[in-house]
Length: 466
Image (cartoon, rainbow, N blue to C red; front, side):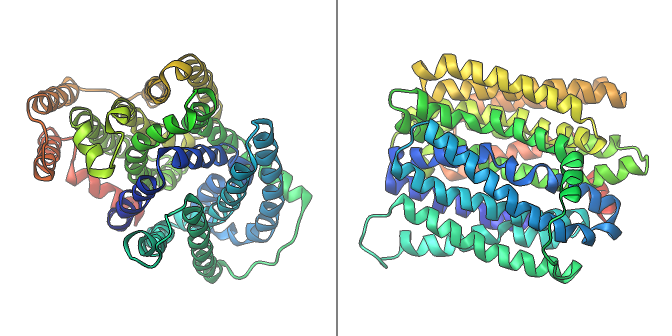
């Protein structure tokens, strides 16, 4: 799964997505980026936590998985109607013009298709079919590279690239991926017969609601920044474009970090059910992810201009500070991936939802104060503060619940690693791809020396998967 994602998604993000922004400009891409994140905000209405519930349920009760398919698929079409009404209704209240609503219509359709793909993947994850899950997870990006690559990098057309083309191609790629995912899913559980049962739908909503609420709350404080930038700043579309440049690399790393969430969630769920000790796995995953996030954050902070210049053609200076701040927020996001996943698998949904609601208040308040004056930089500040606070609270709560103990040696290793990495990056700046690779390699070696990467304990994940 990691290998396939390493091969495909960086090309899709930097070779295609970033190239599209370079072609269409910050303003046009900023509008698309704002609309895309807006479509994410109400995505939960398409799911209502069904995917997370399905993964956990299939992992713990695989024999019952097939009986849910018939009713859930029918219910999803009803949810799509609700989602579309809400999305277009709020878009109208936000006074978006006809062109923006036209783009939003395709993005709304894309979200529905993505949700159906994710539903298929939730079964594969629950059954620990990680190879199948891996193929489906990268197929749409692989197709995007081919189709968009032809338009961007070959003289197949002399017309300037338009943001609409990018959205249309995404729709096509998602449709093809959905067909493949459906074939794989039906080969496991049989072809479902669509039928609607109000009682069953109510039961699913009741069971899934805590998961749905958590996803919805997290989506708001994670994705609302770009929407607020585009709406609240005097030069909103361009500022949203600056924010997108920093967010793109953050999102790329976040995608890889989320691979561990898809691995850890069913494993944690099964371990809690069987009353096994999760601490060794938790320790291994947290040291790897958080240590890696610190490495990425520090290297990116000190080499921001060079990294951005590798990807973009213009407006590097305007995008530098938002990028630096967003990359530091990655540390909190990785901590949330580990400890949030742990608490979700454990079922502490009331606590997680409460903390996420607090996160929304913090995020929206800071954004409202800073965005009108500072634009993308203000939104990035809000993201760092929000992600850091939420991750810290989740960490403290997890330590308290599991009664985890920290040795002086473990804390000392972490502290020395951070100090040495900070000092190295302060004095050694990357002015070439080789130098940047050298810095990252030195950081990885440091993680191994200070036992943040423990190859012996990482085998635990593979054994648990088996």
